[in-house]
Each structure stands twice: as C-alpha cells, then as structure tokens.
Length: 126
Image (spheres, one colour):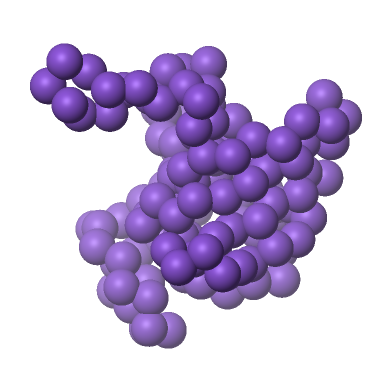
C-alpha cells in the first residue's frame, strides 16, 4: 500500500468533478514561481482508500475510509448558496461532482478540497 501526501482538490474534466489529491512530490515551480502540477501526481479518490485530511494547523479535519456515493446520472450540482449554510465559506457559482462521501455533510466534505487542504491518501488494492 502506498501513502501519498499532497494537496486535496476537485479535479474537473468534461465529465464533472472528482475528489482527488495531488502528490506533493509532483508539484514543482515554473520559471515565474507559479506551481506546476504534473498530471502523473493526480490521484482521484477510490472506494476502499483511506484518507486523512489535515487542517492548516496540522490537526485532523477528517479521517476515514473512502465510501463514495456515485450519482446515477453521472453528475450532481453543488450550488454556492447551499455551501455556506453550514458555516463553510466556499466561493464558487456551482460545481458538478461525480460522487459524495457517504456519512458526511456535502459542504463539510467539499470544504477542504475547495480550500486545498493537505492530506494523506493510503491506496488499497494498488
């Protein structure tokens, strides 16, 4: 089992968004100092993986096994007006996601991905 340390984010493509982590070893700096995320460092979360999400102060925000609820139509929208209802300040107009983590409020789950918190992903079955 490999443990990947890196930055959490919502990876989006033409088919909607996937919860993911970018391996810190594959983030480099461009000539202008801006970050470059190598595609090889992209790891979408998979059922059975174990994720630890860290607050900016290093304490644990959430930890557990990934159990994604997939949407039958392939995507579901998160509206910005709903995101702030539970005290999670996330700025966006709307997002399309492929799945939600079971057992956790959607906005609580999305918050550290939108704020690009650090995390540790232990992949099972790889």
